[in-house]
Image (cartoon, rainbow, N blue to C red; front, side, top):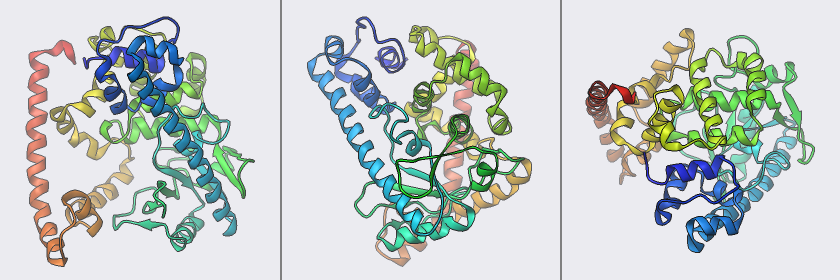
Length: 396
């Protein structure tokens, strides 16, 4: 178990009363930051108690992370209000999603949650027009393939963050088996107005928002935990008031929208782990346990900190277990296309920016061989992890 993990989890999720000894205050901020929990700890604990547990200097660093995150959240609120105005100019409704929705005024305590991108949803016919409107104001995009649910992300001209313009929500199926569109959400009465912003701005209903966060974390990112902090997702559940009663209500209600994309046992393991956290259970006991919550905890942390384990699950992360059979064939073809013949933006991201066109061509020709080498390396890592499980089956 990573050193300081018990203290970090307890102070991010557990009761805040009493004084809890920290094994190594000099490195606790680093661990909390890797898990996307440093601002949360800095904002949850009274400053004097934090100082008593980790020392004045470390406590001051936690508080600094909290204040910076709160300031960034206020700036993002202003940016979201501006996006609402842009959408109004093209007579389009705008739905704020995920972190942007949680950051709306009066939603959850400000400053506890780090976020980078701003995710918005527009009707199918308006998403491209809205993206072009932002491009005309200086927002820029990289030469990367379109996502399966959103357009190419746009970077704010002042560097304030990325905006992902969605036309559908993968993994959320509120009207049959197709990913939810704006029209689907509107027809089901799952949109609530944001009166503090200009234009026709909305957020998802509480139940739909929980469902979207769950399918995003446990459907799209479960097998690639380094791409999205799973502990941030659990913190979102706490801030949205997901307790045992609400979890039961959601299981009997909104879970039906994501049940084809999020396995019931995976959802239960994550929620059970959250219950253990909020009760302040001993983290070492959870880490060393054999239950599904223990397996989930080890998975989401080893998937960030253990390169061998991360490589071993890359095969699973490719398929993600998210799509229905009819969608899977298209997804495989799209994956082959975007993985084997790279755009310039992909070359820049993966290998660094070459000097000219011949450099791009060289990297594109090299790419298939690189993919094969990576697959071989991932395969050896998978075998290594499997052998380790045979040698120590009690660890899962």
